Length: 260
Ligand code: XIL
Image 1 (spheres, helix red, strand yellow):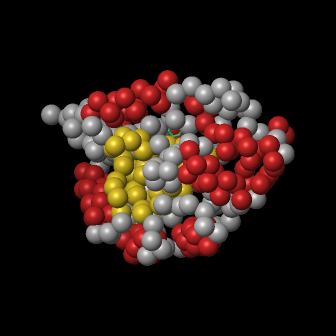
Image 2 (cartoon, rainbow, N blue to C red):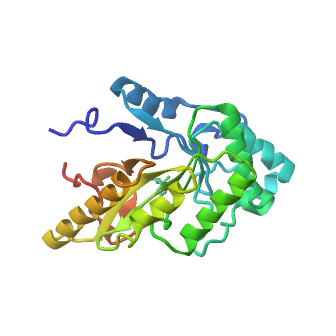
């Protein structure tokens, strides 16, 4: 019997703690939707991962470069960041910083501004940068390692890196575990934060078999890495997954199918 109250040790809100949900107007904070998830976690005795604080998507329309100069945007970020996956997706696939309202106005300093604000708001929360396509060794993973080193040199708080892990069946990056270990070697935690493994539709027995192996590979990479604190799947049934609309032609990415 599937029971989401006992099957999972931790919850992440897919949308309800994002900037557009929590600060729809400047300085007007509403945590009603986020509280639903937090209360659920509390009732079920589950841990809670805050997701996310600073990201280029799902921003309210008032967070634009035309509205703020650097000093103003600094205080906007400081006011918004309380904890959690503090910075989401700061890098492009080629390892450069993503151009968005934050980087275009503040350069890479926005990352430190957000992390310091989160630390000031909560001295206990683990502060993460979260991104995709850093699961295997490569130019983007190297750029993230360099970002961590640079933050550490500047004594900016960084507790962990989240590996989103929106993967494709049969394409789990080689060297996943070694890559996780390269990060933990810097003295930080790592976590698999948004795991799903999609396949081209229709589902076939062969694809489902490969997918089983792929889930095992990813979970074992985390289990085998001291300092990998956990695995979060991004939704647990295909019914609610963002994958079919974001990656047309793909689906069947989660442990529980659409029918369940
Ligand atoms: C997705 C949600 O699952 C969708 O419901 C929403 O429409 C868009 O965002 N990387 C992230 C997540 O960090 O916040 C995204 O979640 C999926 C990609």
